[in-house]
View 1: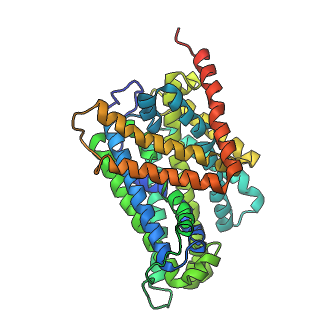
View 2: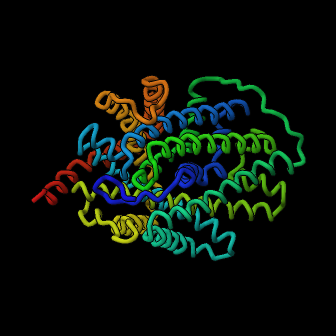
View 3: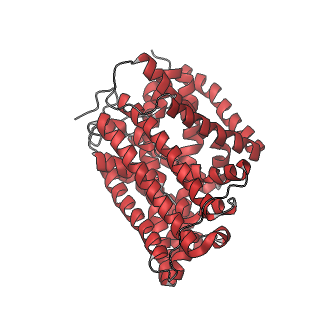
Length: 437
């Protein structure tokens, strides 16, 4: 069955497939490596758990908003489509511009390097092979997705199942095999809003990524029901994983030990199972990051295909393979640009610069819900609860992230805004080049 829109995608994914995309888009390497940053900025174990709990509430709010948007517009393109219909093509293009130039491609480059680092560690390859392995992984995943959404989804389902097993291993090792009596963390003692705000920032970043499923909405069966179910179920699963993993870290390492650890999951697994545990978790991180790269390639290519069809990206990118219904040209373009970023080594800086645009885009996409509620007053199949409080609270949380990031990194913020502004002349050049005949 084909999508009813002009893109011609085939609806071949069910609720389980879509849920795996949500979970895989959120859980990457962060939960295995980065909880130390939250512990460093917190005053007690209870504050650590409170930060991760509030992050889950924030992410669930975003999932509810995107669930209604996906149910209202179940077509490829996600946030780009919502912005185009609500604010016009220029705003939508600027969102797609920073995603194309930096966010999707930079994320793929950075995470593929993380994958390659751990893959080489587990397999015993020389560190000089890290970049070739990263590029090989990008090209392999693009090649798999060339054969259609089912091929990409099979890889994703397997990778997500294995990464969930890795999280379960960390939790079980921390709570059962650590040899330490389980004690619940004491109540939080928040010393000040500034301290807690800095602890919350990395948590909010760790929870982002639920929006990838909206990019492939044109390939999900019964999307008005399947997308909301996948988003809510996936977000609840991720929140449970994050809370249990952090509880396990605190249980074994304590707050001081967690704050001092560069790789808490590896340290925990090594305490529980010795060197074998460290190797196992390195393999788990490799699988988890490989799965994230697959989602970013799968989701990002769909958005760029829609932009090509709109005439604000290379027109060839609008092409769909006649048999596999995959955006073959957009897949190739995204993979090649990401591979070039790996070779350049500048993807880390680009991601830092793009942070401000990424979060501003998230807030604007959430605000499109007001447009749809006003212009389409008929009852939707799914409606986000607590409207308008929910989107207002989400936008306020995003504003907090943007302001905090700007204050902490003013130079990077200015460069990020410059990248956004550079999209304005690019938009008019593309419109001029692809003006309808």
